[in-house]
Image 1 (cartoon, rainbow, N blue to C red):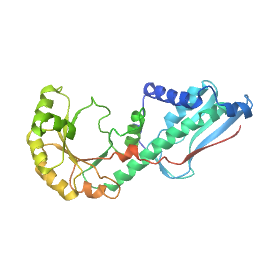
Image 2 (cartoon, rainbow, N blue to C red; image 1 turned 90 degrees about the vertical axis):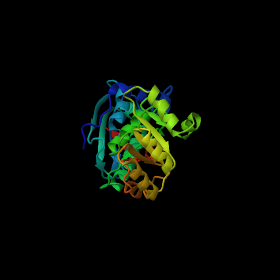
Image 3 (spheres, one colour; image 1 turned 180 degrees about the vertical axis):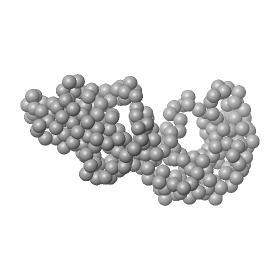
Image 4 (cartoon, helix red, strand yellow; image 1 turned 120 degrees about the vertical axis):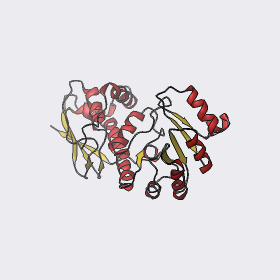
Amino acid sequence: MNDNFTLPELMLRPIVEAALREDIRSGDITTRAVVPPDTQGRAQMTMRESGVVCGLAVAQMAFWQLAGEGCERTELLRRDGEQIEAGAVVMEISGSAEIILTAERVALNFAQRLSGIATLTRSFVEAVEGTNARITDTRKTTPGLRLLEKYAVRCGGGVNHRFALDDMILIKDNHIALCGGIAAALERAKRNARHSVKIEIECDTLEQVEEAASAGADIILLDNMQPETLREAVQIIKGRAVSEASGGVNLETVRGIAQSGVDVISVGALTHSARALDIGLDVELS
């Protein structure tokens, strides 16, 4: 459990509002048609499979924003980042049955998606346990949900790469092609960057690795290299830069990559391929 797993309400509110607007539009015509408007209910959000729970506060906000005073109680029973067994209740809600039913899908979508990312991240983190490597994400996120998905990576024990294009300079193969080479790209980056900005450059060959390290890159991205080549690259860098491995990373290959001695392993699959965790909401009359 980690009390640092929090997100500012100011940043969450517009994301949740957008999700509610998308789902509800002019109203929940099913609930309005079959459930009397004064019906009170209580609900439990339950883990239907084991995993790392994440997104509970976001799910809670879906009920809060829709309810106003209509939800009498919304209680979180577990914390984001906890490993939870199947069958455990993670949230309880009571109040207007209409509010509970209308917000249900949005709340579950957030909890299922973010818990899936956190759970997959935890699997990668555990796979490299005992090595020097840290697991990080990429910008391969769902449009509009990057803040939440990168939060889920942290809840799973990973670390965040850049959030946006202005976080750091990351020179990739297309930039290098347009600049005329590794050294030229790094020289231009250093000349034009703020003093506080880190510079990372992608390398495909060991010759490029030596060139990048000698030219003073802060981080060297070792792209699609086999573990044997990664070991050579780490030896070439010799601590002159942070080494990051990327490409061809999955749960079968990640430990071998980590054992090469790299500092960081970036895994796009954490956010673009995570399976939603099975979490349900059961409602009854109160």
